[in-house]
Length: 53
Image (cartoon, rainbow, N blue to C red; front, side):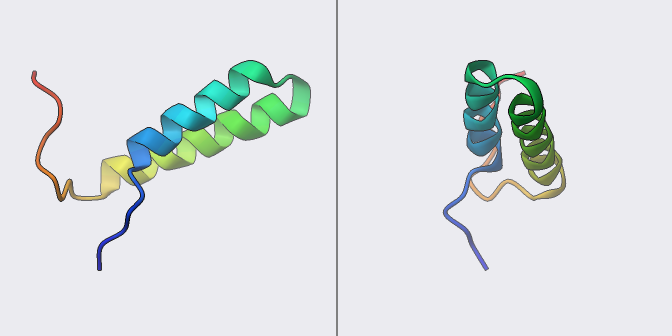
């Protein structure tokens, strides 16, 4: 089953929202970004590696 969501892109978007927020709302965005990054780590990359290390 494929998904149109790119977890890394979602995490980046959440961090951008965190920068604009403050207090509890900022903390929620950061936690959401961490969740997306965890998903990105455990999800096989269907489009090949985008990083050139």
